[in-house]
Amino acid sequence: MIYNAKVVLPILILFVVVLTYPFWQGGTEQRPEPQKPAKAAQCVEDAAWMRANHMQLLDRWRHEVVRKQERSYTSTRGQVFEKSLVNTCLDCHQKSDFCDKCHAYASVKLVCFNCHLNPELVEP
Amino acid sequence: MKKIITPFVLVVLLGLIAWFGTAGLGLYTLFGVVLPYGAFATFIVGFTFKILSWAKSPVPFRIPTTAGQAKSLTWIKPNELESPSGAPGVLARMFLEVFFFRSLLRNSRASMVKGPRLVYVSDKSLWLAGLVFHWSFLIIFLRHYRIFAEQVPFFVPLLEAVDGFFEIVWYNEIHAVTLPGLYLTDALILVALTFLFLRRVLDTKVRFISLLQDYFPLYLILGIVITGSLMRYNLKVDVIAAKNLVQSLVHFHPDTSIQVGSIFYVHLFFVSTLAFYFPFSKLMHAGGVFMSPTRNLANNSRAKRHINPWNPTIKIRTYAEYEEDYRDKMKAVGLPLEKE
Ligand code: HEM
Image (cartoon, rainbow over all chains, first blue to last red; front, side, top):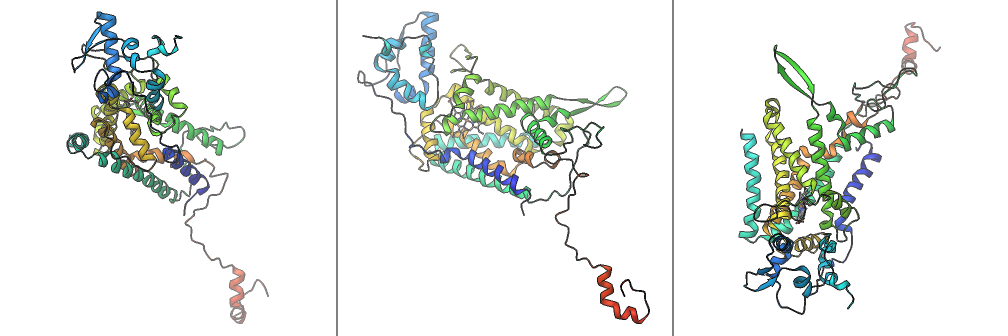
């Protein structure tokens, strides 16, 4: 016999329902599809590496440019790039159909554009 | 010493198993799909059964704690929090217990001073560290809904904004160590867990009563926090792949082709272990706190009659019935009868 079933069962059921929310949330399992740029076949570094590490790379670039005035980056493939968000990254990618796709999906705030100009927003 | 070291070795082994199981043996489906499913199911079913088993235990009598004046005569001031007379007082006491661990404020520490004399002093450090640990854990868990839920729930960005408010990025010579910005709860939970561990190890009396199963969950949760933080700040994985995997799990068609970095599987294996272990361990105090008779019952023994539920139903035989049965015999020997 379950004592105080009128109190215990609703709370227990509520707990299970709340905890299993991801399982009954519905949704169509839409994965983000950032647009592949037409301009270049390859990113600065290997795409899989970039997916995990682009923030580290951008931050290193920022440090090296701002503090040491080192403006050119030689990639592991030997190519040389200008260390610049706007001139290099955003030359191929667009914030709205590239960055925002995954950043919205994973709830990661983009702080780049707190300071940087988003070229998309500049009228031609 | 053995009871302190053994669970540590155990947790390290678990971590190595998940690392080599994925990076070495390629068992991504085992660590990414099978074990998480099994652990979560065990958690839900085990937790439910445990609560039901407690709900099946009768608590026939009120267990008032003697920390406050019960409701009595009108001119004696009752203490509704310490000795509630009804539901509102009980709810207030439960609320403060569950959210602020109020009982822990009564914690004391015994020590021997010169004399020798045994003295007890109030010790609020357990309360503080316990509170910091549990709240950090809750906030971290809630922040994870950016991965668990397909549409990021409204509270996640709020928590992230507050938790990451200071945007602390610490640099060593080579690179940024806490990029993209340290979460306060990540640091706080580490400090609190370290304190809770040292409390058991440094105080002889607490060490004496601590068991292997007290250290194991501490190490396991430390393992979860360390691997989670390493993943966020240093080793870096493809978070989108991690979320895709989790979404494929919760929508019941697991995508076995996804491979995230091994640190993710170590994190997930630790969490799976915790979920699996939970219903069978002291961690069930999370559910048990709601079932504590000293916390969830009003002290109304004198106002209300509580009947022991396992009392047998006794068949009562009145004197009138007795007399009815033996009337003739009693009359024959001249015994006095109540009813002629
Ligand atoms: C008991 C539950 C858990 C705890 C206490 C925990 C703890 C943590 C901590 C402390 C971090 C560091 C960053 C942060 O605070 O957000 C973290 C990161 C992470 N956790 Fe967990 N975790 C738990 C469950 C899970 C589960 C079930 C998954 C996935 C199935 C998961 C996936 C991740 C991922 C992908 C990250 C890295 C996020 C990033 O790189 O930004 N965690 N976890």
